[in-house]
Length: 166
Image (cartoon, rainbow, N blue to C red):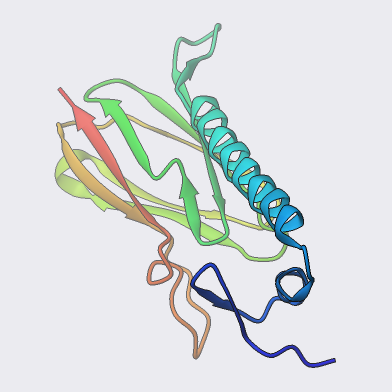
């Protein structure tokens, strides 16, 4: 079955279900229900991202007092991609690769701040790295993986920023 492109509310689509809905007589109610469900899923996705960002806030271990930040690596993204630390404070980054196949790295190199990090994080694993940023500033981090004939992970958007405050 071929589905010709159909214009729905000014948007051209080849989606079979949307095309079927638009071609039904009296399908206005079903169409409104589908749009409402789509809005609800977008709201739930937004709520999920907020919850995920709350899970990424720093925590302190009871026995050492070292700040722990959880960072997820996957789908060519760091979550969160913006980390804020305090200069001179020791922090442990728990780097979890949520991809099933793709390995990633967490690479941050700036000798002036005392940051020389290059951690391999194989698929489905968690690696920890402890660091103490020496000076305030903004430092980019990235994944340095690249497969032959493909864009690098960084070019696909796998980069972030570490902000060190005084």
